[in-house]
Image (cartoon, rainbow, N blue to C red):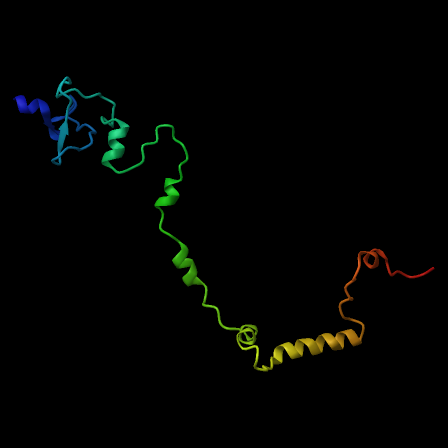
Length: 149
C-alpha cells in the first residue's frame, strides 16, 4: 500500500455517486496521476476540472504560460505561412516590350502599340482635345487664362 500513496490510477478517482472525475492523465505511464507526499491519495476537489497548476499544464501540453492573459500573438505565429500560396496565386510576370528595350538598348526595336498611342495623342492635340501643357514656373501656374472682359 506504500507505493499506492505515490501513484494512483485515474480509474480509482471517482466521486461518491460513481461518476468518473474529470482528471487529467499525466505521469510517466498513461493513466497514472501523481500525488504530492503530504496530500491524501484520494484528495480531490469536487468541482475542480483541472487538478494541475497552470504552469505544469502548459509544460505538459507545450503551450505558453500566460497568467496575465496578455495578447502575445501566439495564435498568429502558430498559423501556416501564407507567402508561398499567395505567390503561387498570381501568374509569373511576362517580359514586356519596355523590359526588352531596357535589356537591349543598342538594338532599334519597334513598338507598334506605343506608336499608335503617340499617334492618337497627336491627332487629339491637333483638334484641340489634348492635355494642356505643363507650366514651367510657379508664376505661370498662378495666372488664370480666363476670358478678358
